[in-house]
Length: 255
Image (cartoon, rainbow, N blue to C red; front, top):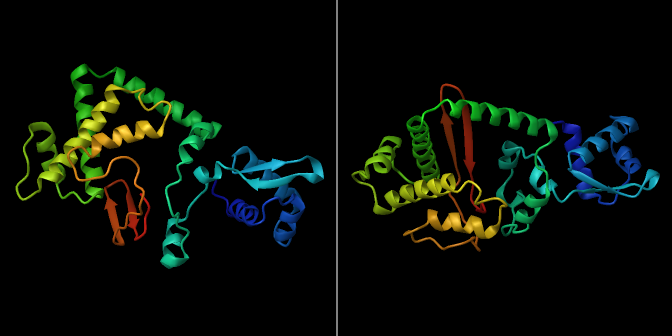
């Protein structure tokens, strides 16, 4: 969902629950027709951003519970606001797991595209020998372990990570905890690859099991955090020859 008008109507419904299509049109009457409002509402219902109750002129509209999973966020506008003006959750939403089990996150077009990509992937790996396939997984483990650990403050380079995971060679000047963090990431990934159905269906207990692998022998509390985690605000720019993206960290981020 990318249309500005859709976002505006969602925001209106969020602030005026139990509203009718007529009330929504009244808010936007100077810029769009009633027919356009009805068309947008139909699309939002199809995309599960909103739900409705009643029939005909008595139909009322509400924000869908799945909106929490699906709504768009403009990160640049979000970070333009002062911290005390930002909408920040006070605690982790544990209901998100139940919602994930009940909500269709992808629409039909997205599911079709994903199925096509999966078919292409299956075709590609079917042409690999066992040794080639293991080599690809090894490369994935190195890249993913390095990048994920780097986000947590790990200072190992990609080359140092490769030496650690392949040859168990620790890097000079690095801490023991940094090496353990990287090795734990690889162990967690190996576990998921070896047990592809373990996280189906997704449950808190299973997420906590994976988390236990990640924090093994590290001074980190087990299971979901019960307090806010604070990072120093910074902007990190990653770039390659093909793309460039920005990670913008801020204080009071809840992880």
